Length: 200
Image (cartoon, rainbow, N blue to C red; front, top):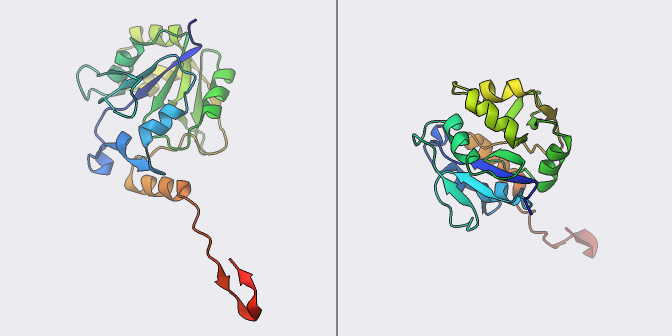
């Protein structure tokens, strides 16, 4: 039986603001960012990654954009060619707070598409879901290079959800904030208090 949705994670490009580091492989809470994103789409029929092969994602389909490093629109074109489900979750590889619940909310709200918006109301084009046929048709007609130019005319439903699922790690400061938020709670230590009481 065909799954309701596939997932396409765009994981290429150079993380210039992170000194050219392998951003999808950076760890938050002990886990590579891209594996956290993949964990948010457990019900996807196919997991398609546009980017380098990742040993932690053995069931994923890996493809590369043409030309390599050509930007998000060529990457989407390469990934969408592998989608077989009627819906596709289009996601960045660096969303440490995205969960399966957020993706389900997007799918439930979507008509032709739905995207998350940040606290400022800005659409996050790599945190959304789309009807595959609509997205394929729009991509076939589009000659530009920006995701905004491609996706905004499709007039997606926008959702602002709790938990900052749209938060991405574009800079070293972003990465630090994500790691602080996802860090393990401090070890609770027994301390002898005055009067013989035990506190923590």
